[in-house]
Length: 350
Image (cartoon, rainbow, N blue to C red; front, side, top):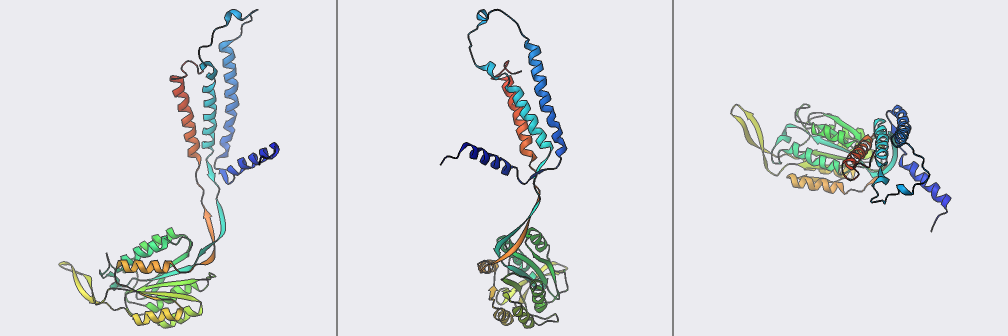
């Protein structure tokens, strides 16, 4: 269906305005340089009149010359290209930028706290390169695959603390997780404290779905809060806990630094599967056992398929510099003028 001419003109004006919506200029003062353009046009007209002048004759029949080509028609193309290049360059100098804004939106996601054991036994090498690094790398991949979730990190050994609170900024979370290493806190395995710290971070959450992923390779031997007590607290706040026991069955190679270099000892794998299973059952979660890198990856993939709930997030949009396209346009126009002036339109451009 064809629109009336007035409607089409109005639609075109709206489209032109929408193209520049959200754009601002860091240095708008450079727009004063636009007065150069009328000056260039005036100078060009004056120069044309001076170069070619005028001649009055009674008849022009004798001056008629057959037109051999159309090149003279393009003799003003050079100044047009220069004017367009100057306009594009001034726009680039004004530094156009996408506007800085906050955007409230509703996305599909859940609130997740990862509680990771970093005790000395996590250095055992039944995982590659060891349990701690394997757990970090696979968890980071899990985080990157869930961009709509708020995710945080708690680490524990003899005690626990929050390495990163709940955040939608996963770049920050990943960097903080990558910095985690053995020895950051006193050694031991305080499962109850690690779980309680994660629950404390989630208890104020208004998300419909709140989850803790608790990963450990041992049994609780430190801390003032028993693991099952922490599980009951999680249940009261509507938090599901997915527990992951990490470690092979039997014995695992453990590196020990000696005067002769690194030596390996076989240490028993002591995962308290009973307690971890009870924690999961109390909170409505599930217990998993990871015996190598692949099974741990599969576990995170299963958790990744959990049901999602709607949460409100606020997204921050940074300014983006947009001057480069205008600078490239100016360079292209000037290059085009130079090429035409020295090739196809040689002698025609002024």
